Amino acid sequence: MQKDWVLIYTTTNNNSAQIVKSVLGSEGINAVVVNKRDSMNLHLNNASVELYVKSNDCLLYTSDAADE
Image (tube, rainbow, N blue to C red; front, side):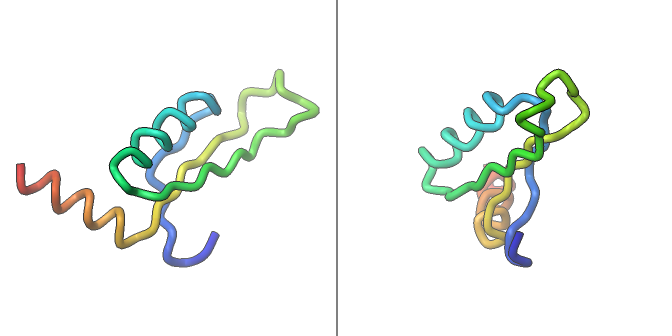
């Protein structure tokens, strides 16, 4: 990933990552899902699915949450 992207969520469930991405998108925050699972060995549950946002969006969200 580029240096201005921040990892905000890690899971082993791709569907969970897609739901979080969708919620962020509805709030105007662009997110990227990086699926590190091997498609040939889905039975191995040790790989992760990661969700990244731009660092300025991460700061925006945390400052908005602090204001509430």
